[in-house]
Amino acid sequence: MKAIKFASKAENITIVEKFIDDLRNEVNIGDDVYGNILISLTEAANNAMLHGNRANEKKNVEISYSVDERGKNITFIVKDEGPGFDYNNLPDPTAPENLERTSGRGVFLMMQLADMVVFSDKGATVEMQFRI
Image (cartoon, rainbow, N blue to C red; front, side):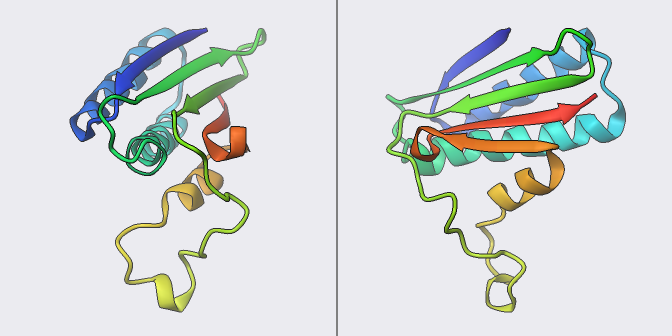
């Protein structure tokens, strides 16, 4: 398992992007899955920094990943230091009244792009699995 930890500063999203690019050099990930991972992890990291940690630069976000022994699945865990959120009660970003909103699509995208998404710690931790 490999992990990174970084402060909740918007510019640190580049750390996440580099983490994913470095991962791609170690694990054979196709272009489609790479794109899904990149979008899902950057959304999760942004949510953790902005919503979970309330952009408090003293709070960290941690991302780790592991590949199963057969090399068929990769699992990411994204944790923030916030109180969590009600992940079962989010507005539907595809509803007509939400289509013009510029935010509120992160969890929806993660659910669409990952093969499995599980929230825990009252929503402060998200686990995403992708078939590779």
